[in-house]
Image (tube, rainbow, N blue to C red; front, side, top):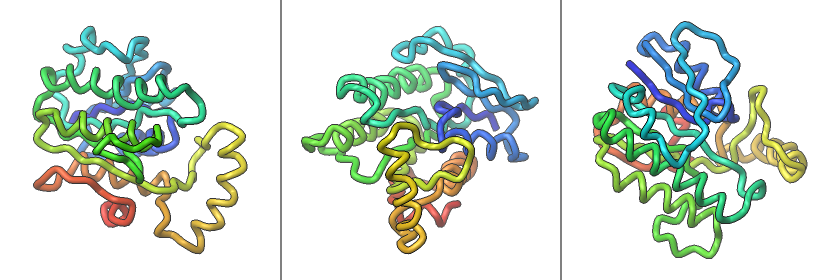
Length: 217
């Protein structure tokens, strides 16, 4: 299988990348990002791309893929409201517009979030943007579309959430996670669930809520 991944330098994307490279079913992994991952592997190809609002120049290189794991994102407090919508929604649409022509039969796995509001009526920027991203994916023609809505994501790898808010919140959340494991999922288990569904698709497109994802990890 040929698998495309975005956001492979992020907390979950980094875990998903390594799982893909280790899987015998995967022949090729193509990572697209603003910078390269620094990982060296015979299965891995990388594209450092500057304009995430336009992937048309990569159409030929995006042909013939079986799955896409879209982990590209940003923490809301790190950018303006306008940029959060652009990164969460517009970047995704620009990618899927090209992929629908280049690899129309692929399985698309979206790293979403608990609290996403597909009605897009929420006054909360995070909920509205994540809901719009889900709607944009559901409007595509891909035969299999999986949306993952994790709650708290416990970091277990080298990549940790950035910013002082997260540096304060993560230790507290990790303690709570030990007592209330249903509040979230580890970055590794989330990545594993996404990879497993990308490589072994379920019959129908669906949304995976926080409590369901561990079954597929």
